Image (cartoon, rainbow, N blue to C red; front, side, top):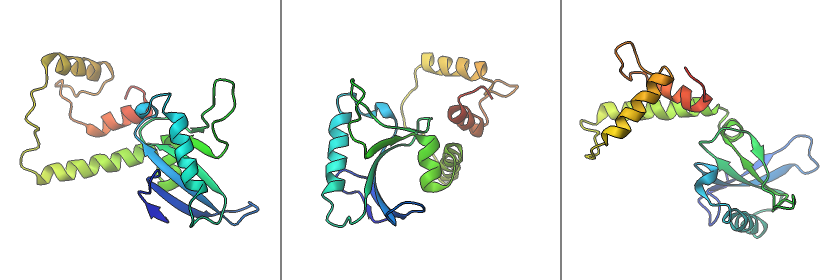
Length: 176
């Protein structure tokens, strides 16, 4: 890893390659939760800004690739195109969680989410009160309960007691 939290990128890395005419490639990464974090009209500006930063990086001496890493949305990778079909940049890709996490962490999206859950559970054991002091509306509670029943996320007593089931449901997008 070369740098964290640059002007446009959250981090950038220089990676040695195999079977490429250059020995290394610089990757500039901007991490987003989901693709809808930015509106459609914002993508061209964000792509141009990230690529301009990569092109003008005085420390870069190798070819570059710009990546928008989408941390919490299933899929692999693609490039953003204009209405006519031309890409905004041939050097910029969108990497969804099924490609992003294994590439940078060598773990699947589900493994990463389970690690986050484990950390939250462990932290919750250390904190006496983890409530946020906000009353959740009954309609929301009932709707959540209906969905949990529909997808078999509740135990025989009608209680939600397996957070890993919920993570698996969100990551795999299928009933448990």
